[in-house]
Image 1: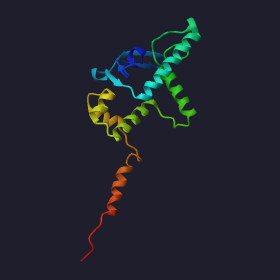
Image 2: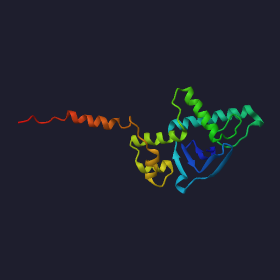
Image 3: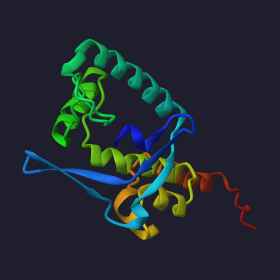
Image 4: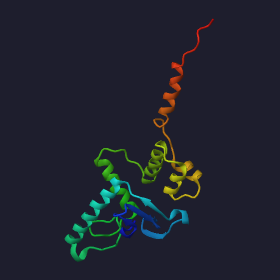
Length: 171
């Protein structure tokens, strides 16, 4: 993600390309898989605030590093402005998870957890697919909406309501 793709004033993010780490060495940047994958997404307030703070941190790091700072234009960079690759990003995310006592999950699994959360909280399927960059709602539901046992709890509670249904006494 590049800063050019982020509009903090409008609180939006443009998804216009992908970056992949090939063979744990080479970063390949290319267009998205499909036209549907190119999309504008609204930033939740919490994300907008975090990006605003992160931008300020990068400005301070650039001033500290001076000429050593590589102004790559990417959002996720090290203290010298060099873009992070997938492995480096994973390592940093895992460190944050460990520091906060969170269960370590793969970033790809976190994506599925987010879509499951949105689905469980009433976001319509067509909006989930749009957010994911899929043209087919079935793709999103099949691969990214994965309810766990606690997600099923409200259904169990509904079944429990059957016990409170009064039945007429035998005549």
